[in-house]
Amino acid sequence: DPDAYAFCHRVRVRFAETDAMGVVHHAAYLPYLESARVEWLRAVGRPYTAVRADGLDLAVIEVAVRYVAALRFDDEADVHVGLGRVGPAAFALHYLVRRGDEAVATARTRHALLGAGDGRPRRLPGWIAALGRPR
Image (cartoon, rainbow, N blue to C red):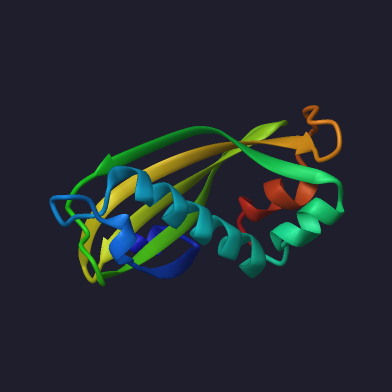
C-alpha cells in the first residue's frame, strides 16, 4: 500500500540500466533506492550534506530486494520510502517501487550511523527516532 510510505521519488529507467533481455538489471535498483533515500532525507529537513556537515555518515549495512515485475527502458517508476525499525545505532527504510498502479519491487535497507572522519559507530541522533513517532 503506497499510502503506508511517507515519501515518493520518481525515477526514469535509462537505457544503460537495462540488460540483454531489455529489462532493468537487478543491480540497477540499488541506485534507485539510494536516490529516493537521499531525496527522502532532503524532504525531512536533513539533506545528506547536512548529515555529513555534522560529521556523520549513514552506512548501508544490509539490503534486501524482492523483484515482482520487470521495468524496461524509459519506464517511470515511483519509489516510495518509509521509515522502519529504529534502534540505538541503526535504522531501516522500506521501499515500494511502482510503475503506475503496479508494484515492481519491494526493498529494505538497514543503516548504521558512523563518524565521517573515523568510521566508528555512533548513536542515532534524536531526529531519526522522531521521524518514526506519530505526530
